[in-house]
Length: 125
Image 1: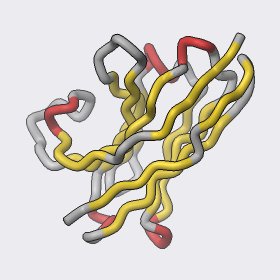
Image 2: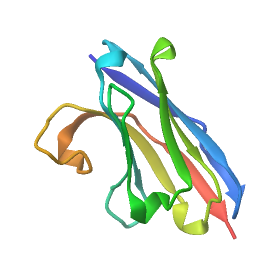
Image 3: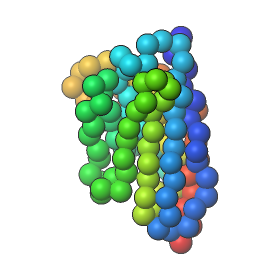
């Protein structure tokens, strides 16, 4: 059974930076395609970034706008999300997820069956 545990959330002021981590266990991490999503209060969960097993990356331009960086360390079974120039609208619970379906929609939640419990990010103005 795959387990994902996020960490690194917290409270920062606008313009600040945070680094999130997602530790995976229960399988062969190096073969996983992974993603970060986020969910703000009252809103649907939205895709943030994706990293393939080969470390190819894709970003949501609406969310990232060049401010977020996804990476992975297979030796540590961990995927990261480095965020800079944070804004109040980035306030959300951030989730990592392991992709299990390949219907061509890596940016949709339905392609992911394994999720962490999330880590809260709060950005104050």
